[in-house]
Length: 334
Image (cartoon, rainbow, N blue to C red; front, top):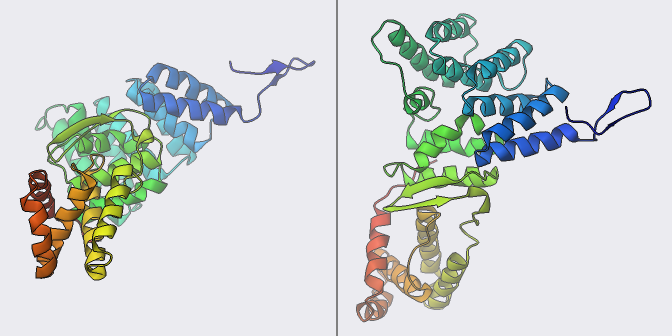
């Protein structure tokens, strides 16, 4: 048991703020993938404050990651009975645990009860109906037992949504507990076919939450393992700020109106590429982006001037090719 000391009456005296430090350290261990340490710390925090929603949620997720499904189920059920935490987030965790335990009868009963009580929000009806249909098919022998990836797909908050809807949902996660959705979000980051705009949104959510666990990012023919908590804001990087400075120097006097369009274009492409920077010298990037935008807005004088720089510089060709490739990717309209 974690304690500071015993007083003269033999009573346990705890460190001030002990449960908060245990929660913080437990979550950090969970994010690093040190599940055993995480479960130990969060269990101690749970013993100090069994009704704390953050402690309960973190402990359930730690037990889940450690495949301690029965324990996770017990705590999750208590949360539902006692009204601890966000009700529908807890229900999502509970159903995921039941699926891992292959307890599809209880999945069906739980979801039927939700609909019978008419408590399911409209935006979650489709989600729970899919889970219900899935477990009913398993019980009827029409669906094989699912893998972990299939479970994530069945309990997904993003599956079946448009890019615009997905973007809004991910943006909202900045202010929510994202740990019930971590695995799903990680799968999107490593999916080279996922939309790069959505991947950047997810990566920013991870960075805002200080996720220390290393994740694989695969997008636009590049792949890298990154630690979100250590990533720099995309618009504060040295490459970005220096390129912006070069663009401003190039166009501030020549065409200040066009300058704003060039900056917006470069900013949008940098967002799509994140965490990978656009390759090339800052001066070359400025010239190529100025040239391309001048051609878009029929500034033939500037276009001809910058074309001379591009045609005499072989380093500009791959930049122009990448620019056109990024322009073919449509961003969501929010």
